[in-house]
Image (tube, rainbow, N blue to C red):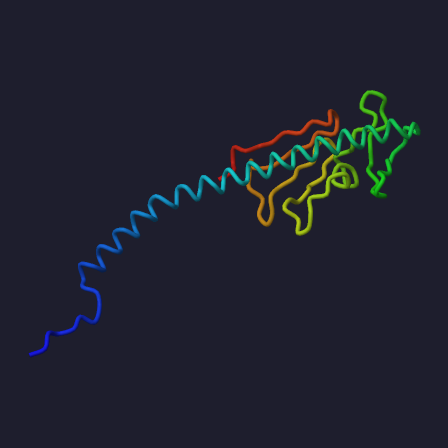
Length: 151
């Protein structure tokens, strides 16, 4: 007499595998969320560094040219609208054609820029996240990184 061959998994084996997968998922998903938040914050901090560098570069070019007019033409031909007021001379404007021209966010774009009279805002794409952005202030050339809403 021949012993019956087993052709599949028993119900207990399937339940054990599902329990193990559930435990792994319960551990992995919170870690993935943390990595996503950290990646967004790192991206925002990188952009903030780029903006700060662009401000210094444009201001140096403004001073070096000695014409003290707007716009400033950078060496690659990019024109940047700047303030010509003595106290803030050479600072890129937050309006269109200012800091957004000085900072190249790459292709495909990782950020979208929303110009404004006093401040401009860089938001993540494809969907902006409230309180997860970089704000440029034209009056001071300052950059603020908002990470409270990054999830």
